[in-house]
Length: 198
Ligand SMILES: [Mg+2]
Image (tube, rainbow, N blue to C red; front, side, top):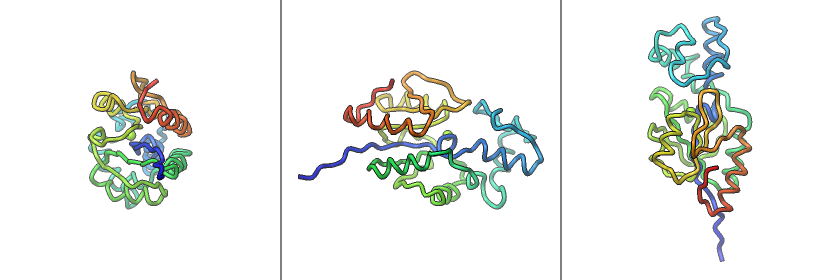
């Protein structure tokens, strides 16, 4: 008799969750413009250009599209333990489904970044409407995405990757460390995959 190992489809955002966008752009910006922006000053989602000399976000994105020959997304560092945790979950049989919204200029850099960091995923979506992709669990750092997940996928596990720019939300589970995800996945499997937010 064959026995199918229970597994979950894990919908994973990249920037602010796996890739450290904040420290990444700030270190490049500080270097290039001899500035001293503190990454800890990013406590809001919209309008990060206000920390810079750029007039608006269009100028910010224009700069970020070519930093040392690639877009800023090519240069980001992963958060500690993120790649390891995801690859462990992949090796346990779970599907790692990347759900990331990127500017058009960053598309090939995103695939190059995933390959460079050895993230094992069979499914990568560069998409704004992330909730259109069916997963058992979602992790994101943007309040507007968490709100949309609660609205469109109320019966799934929805996780906030805790950052200074997001807030606790009803029906959303806080993930502060990547290792928090292991017990959450275990608990979900014990319940037969049924979602039951804390
Ligand atoms: Mg994000």
